[in-house]
Image (cartoon, each protein chain N blue to C red):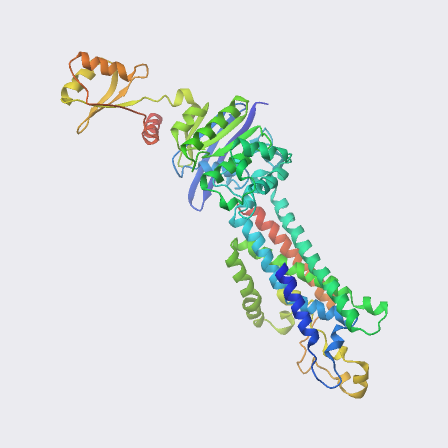
Length: 298
Length: 254
């Protein structure tokens, strides 16, 4: 049984707005599936449906090949949207409730609080936590009972850089343990770093899906300038190291071929007698990547 | 809960001190066995709204903290959520029942000079009636909380319904139909103690005529269905509300 989650023709609308529109995909055991999309593309709605809080308008989904029910949900650790806890209870009491629902031993609470670096605040009330700590507590709740499947909705939301790195490290170690992980995110970088598969959503529709390595080959974009930009452009065009060369107001942008290092370009233009005043390497934004993917689809 | 306890205790202590000087009638009779059960159930019923508001807050918080949602995500079913709240309502009603029973016994023992065991239990079924009434108020409260999903709105609508909306709707119907409305039925489970019945026998002999006086016909006591019918209807309404709660919870998204 290698199929963990399969979604068939799922639709969900809020009034007249179609949040999810005829969505189908399958997640295999041991993969890390990233659902990528801009705000309002239906990521959270999809996750809310598969975690049982929203009723699908059309279509169906299966967990572990079964009709979904509470037994299936207990095997999944989910973080959907915002952290939801009782503000007047302590972290420990909040996790106790979750542990009882999932039939998990209470000893596990200390472990997950340790992993998310919240042990010190174990007996603080939930509403005394900062936003980042609340997010980490949700993450602790997800890890409770060491579930075989993790469903994470924007796990890095509201975290400081250290927290983001920490969450990413935990996700990767869960992945290395062979867990199946489903992550929704609008941060391309996040998906690129941890996911094996990706599905791209736009307006509730799955635009494309597949292996991250194949779909998100990221061409880096260079921004260059020199005292004489026109000459620089000519030289670059002849070099064969870059493509899509465009002249801007005070700089030149070009897409660097994946096998080339930016240093090589610098070396090349110096040999041709031009000193660069500026050389920047940028990753394309999600937006431009999207536009490209959508264009490819058409 | 504590507030409920303190208010209830204060009211009965104050009430027990009042002794209206009506010739041949003593308030103290209200606190003797077996009438103490009717009196206390009646007084306790004033605070049912408080219990209902407590339930509205308990259920409403689950929506505003989104913890209902989280618990479904963690692996509870909608039925589990509703049954969980049902159990809480049961225990709150049980607590009120015990409160009325304990305080009723204490006051009954203090005020009754000599009583027999049969006196003690003869009207104690009113406690069970009170239990159903308290549960009924709380279930209506839960229904409001589930419909409006917002504490203040649910409390306001709940109070408006009890005080204005249903009485106004009732006006449009004939008096025979009026008595079948849910709030009317449930709030009439514990009627105020009948003044005549509790007057001492000695007084009744002295003031001949009042015993046969038809208070109902002159409108002093409104016409009421017999308690058994009211009780059955109340249970029917409660069952209907419980059914509605399950239906709404199942149909709606969390």
